[in-house]
Image 1 (cartoon, rainbow, N blue to C red):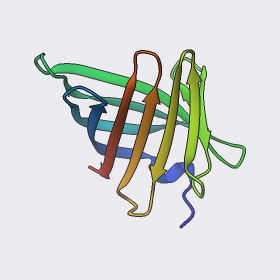
Image 2: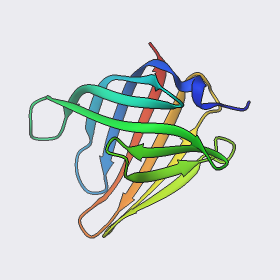
Image 3: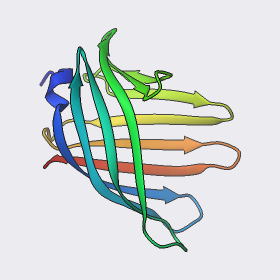
Image 4: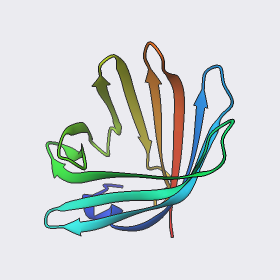
Length: 135
């Protein structure tokens, strides 16, 4: 299956677990919307984040997805580069000094899909798994 940028357009239900190496896990439940903006898709996610030792809180994030190179380029909402990936080889990295972020996307159960981030740095060591399904 060959995925195109337009295949992501629309509303998705989002379920995320954040697993620190030596701490209790956190959770996020919400939704994400990919909205067409010219040749790009704007990604906006919002929902409820629950971290150990605190009550639920509202959380949101935004990105810009666009076609480029051999696949999809993902930028932060302000236009700074984040990462890019080829849906046929769905892995990427992002260095945010001093932390290293590595993502692997899974599209084998499309239209359900997953993003698994592994984050390591001097004060970070966690895995974050996000599952998406059509709303």
